[in-house]
Amino acid sequence: MKVLAKCAVCASPLVDVINRKMTEGMSDVKISTWLKAENSYISRITLGNHKRQHLTVEHMNARKEVARKVQDRKSTR
Image (cartoon, rainbow, N blue to C red):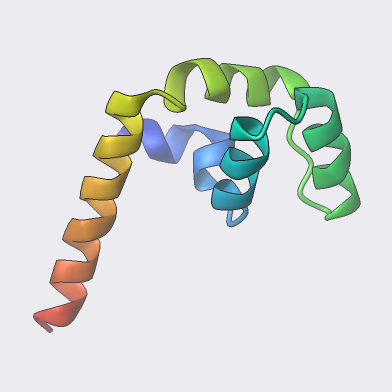
């Protein structure tokens, strides 16, 4: 899914932790500061864009579907 690849947050290995922190109400500034300390800096602007565009029910369901398809491919090899 190209949209996922273009988003710095979606492409991050920390995406699940970032999403959890966002859904728990942590501010974009605090998440950005935490990421900088983890040597994985993402700006607060990018985090805000990710939250508005990708933390929707529709997008999260599409992400789960992509993950399921990847798992299915791995299990058939």
